[in-house]
Length: 89
Image 1 (cartoon, helix red, strand yellow):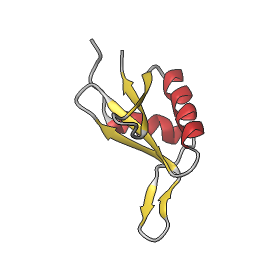
Image 2: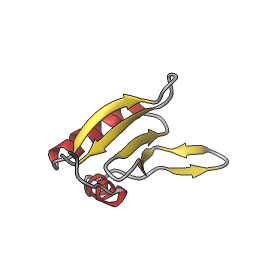
Image 3: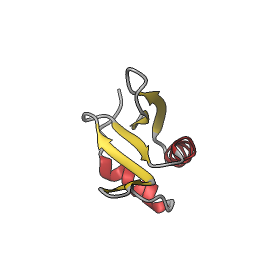
Image 4: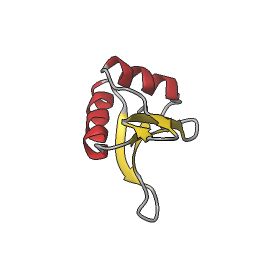
């Protein structure tokens, strides 16, 4: 059974690699970067906002797996956004 995981832990790993969190500007839209969202006690979802979604998600996957996280790529229902399900084995 996966262990409890928090957004803070995922963000720490991504920030240590030099990844920047995304920011929303009402005039320009999303600045490229990651966004981590708690999805229950045992899962965090990671999105890439802005251009370069595919490359960003691949980079996040590599970094998170290298530090022991279990990462599964997914797409939101109905053809929605791509995301990563991140857990601790």
